[in-house]
Amino acid sequence: MTISAPTLEIGVLVLGLFVLLVEAFAPRIEKRKLAFTAIFGLVAVLAASFFLAPAPVDVATTGFWDFYAADPLAIFFKRFALVTTILVLVMMIDYAPIVRQSIHGMTHQSGLGEFFALPIFTCVGLMWMASAVDFVMIFVSLELVTVSFYVLVSFTRRNPATLEAGVKYLILSALSTGFLVYGITWIFGVTGETNLARVTAVLANPAIETVPALFGMVLVLIALGFKIAAVPFQMWVPDVYQGAPTPVTAFLSVGSKAAGFVVLLRVLQPFFTLPQMERLLTVMALLTLIYGNLAALPQNNLKRLLAYSSIAHAGYLLIGVVSLAGEAISFYLVAYLLMTLLSFAVLIAVAKQTGDNIEDFNGLAKRSPFLAFAMLIAMASLAGVPFTAGFLGKFFIFDAALRHDQTTLIVVGVITVACGFYYYLKVVRAMYWEVSAIDTAVPVSGLSRLTMAAMIAGIIFLGVYPQPVLNALRPPISQPAVTAHP
Image (cartoon, rainbow, N blue to C red; front, side, top):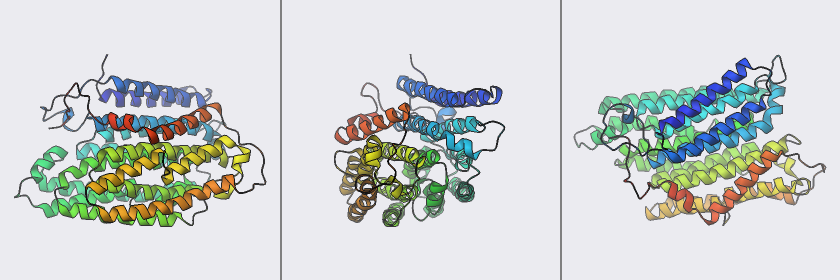
């Protein structure tokens, strides 16, 4: 049995509507059951993604397939979005008591249904973005994701820091949307097209004016720079990451960044023939690497440290963009998914007992050896210790840069990796060498423990054998590689 690729998004959308309807018409139901329903539903969609029908042959020039791609890159990132959402929902179940304390409502479960439903609609937007090969579809799917995050970031509205984070994210995201629309307008004005394949064909004409098109692309790059947290568009990241509910911070850090990079890879294809674009991306990558790593050094709050770490990792991913290394970027994002969500999962468990500062992790190895080991693996992978997925991710990025003679990026990248060892290992030192006045074990649910163990295994397994991820990006040998756009 085979299904078409758009069926995946339709299935997730129906699941989200079902969760909302149950929330509205069954007020007495235990709301955590909605989270389990969402998780099982997304797992079913993920399983269905392995039974997709082949993409249509490259002959259609109009209609649905004109703006929708079902190539290996799109399918890979659809699965990426599904896995990310499943893991975030598991984290949200643990975070539910904090949400209950922060919502004004008639019952102690008020707001939980919406809290579990919104990530599903965010996942739909992320999946559409993975297949978007037309500027109109890119804009619509991007706004679906952004509007969902507006609500999620400010969900625990009794917390002033959360409200501040929501306002900052709303204002700056709306500004970035303006840049995106204006950039698309310029590109359409020059080429008369919004489909990326046809834009590429028009720009190949020597008679076309490249300066207005390049200006439009710069505006689009500014908007996407906001989504991926690249310098100088990163000003929102530390405050929003710290103020937002921790599972939402994890979702922002992984899901939004991955979607931004897959869109960036598609949008840049028509413009990489212009030498100015490569120089601009190189400068952006250098600034992002330097700022993200240096700003993370003095941080004492773990959420802010991971926020600046997110900026630094955007810099490494931009090295892959400059080097046209799609496989390296995809593998790095998978590694980033595992190690970042693992660190946030441990943070949620520890923060409920003590707090989210690094000193709150003092003596964690004695109180909860499993959580300390999980955080150790996450920090080691983020730093790039050998035999972890994070190490191979950086290795593939630097290898691609070396083959494209990006010497400056390699030198700066290696130096900033050394900076990362310092601030990541601060957390390890606190857990294993510092003494804590608290000797009570940190409670962890069975589902969370199982999820953390799976992520630990994934980090170590991919650090030794990366082939499953790399093979997932390649079309099957039995059928030709096809795309859904002309």
